[in-house]
Structures are given as structure tokens and as C-alpha cells.
Image (cartoon, rainbow, N blue to C red):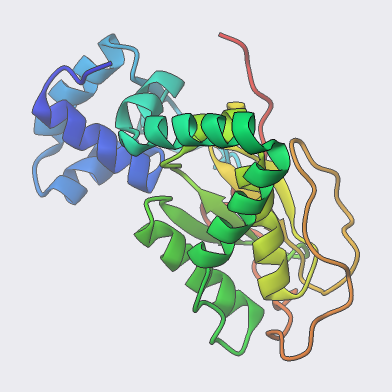
Length: 258
């Protein structure tokens, strides 16, 4: 699906990179007025590419506020698909060819190599929380629009608001599994994928525990990582006393059928 206008496409791509945003935040990002942003937002909403609500589709409830609440705009599944790069279709065709010719084991091998190359050179920080931020920066450079949200007792959550290969990952979950395993090896602990864009969730979310211990949480789509024993030379544990009310904390949400 094409975007209604060039302005609408610019707004949609900012939503893909930054996640759910208010009209004011979008205007600041574009260096224009809120009024100027509302027209492309209306066009995107009419086309079914954007949805609006009084709060983000994931994260904690901010609670009651005075005055009229600001509406939060986020991409729909169709909106995310419209933002995807052409190489997603190419990646899907290539993986189908590889699976048909050499089997799914070959796909898993390719996915593992891709994940290792994706995180190559990351991990120079001395603490786990700094390393997770390194990972987020690397993923953002690769088009995943990643961020880190601290949690009080559970360490942190790595959130990916965009996926350049979402269609390929939907058909070949080996891509998501390999990324999760690679992250676990890098941090020397078991990490858990709670939600994925490929499975219809609003954001890819990976739980990173505060300690290098066995996982204490279930999962929605994949539960992958490394054994609980820390690797030699791995970063220090994420502090467990991170504020619980850190803004923007993401949580898994149930997918609602259209």
C-alpha cells in the first residue's frame, strides 16, 4: 500500500522509528507545527495506516490527567507493512529458496550467522546495562528502532519498534530465535523474547534479567538464550534497583483480532 502523500510517509516513518507518539512530539521531530502534522495524520488514519488512542498501545497506564488528554498515534499492521523496505520481500524469497533446496536447518544456520554479524563488535562496555544500550544503538543503525526500558527487579527490556524483515521473520521464526540466542550469549545470561512484530504484537520485546540466573518468566512466542552460568569476562549484572516507574516501560499485550 502506498502512502497518501509524501508528508504522510514522513510522519509514518517517524512513527516506525520512534514508536507511538503525540502530534506534538511528531511536530517537534519534523520541525513544524502541530497543526501542520494533523493533516497527514488524518490522511494516514483514513487510509488505515495509523490508529489513535488516549494512551500508547503498550506500556504502563499513566493514570488520570487534568484537562483533555493528548492522543497517541501508532502504526497499524498495514502501516508497518507500508514502511518496510523492499529487501524484506527479497529476503523472504531467498529464505524460501534456501529452505526448499537445503532444508530448515540451513535457514537456522544462516539466521545464526546473520545474528552474530549483526552484533559483531558490540560488548566493549563493562556493565550489562551499558552493553544492552550498545545493542540498542547497533540495532537502530540497522533499522530496528530499538530502545532500552529499565525495570525494577527484572533488569531491563530491549524493545524494537520496527523490523526491516518482519515478513521474513513471520514465516521463518529462526531469524528471531537466532537474535535472541546471540543476545543471550553476548550478555552471558538467559534472555526471553516476550513479543514480536512478526507475530502481530506492537513491539518486539526481550526481557533481560538482572542476574545471570535461570529464567523466571514464561514467554509468548519464543524462550531462548543461554545457560544460567555466566561466561568469563561477561559484563556485570544490571542493577536491580532501577526505578520501577521509568517512563515508557513496555509490557507484552495480547493481540486483538481485527
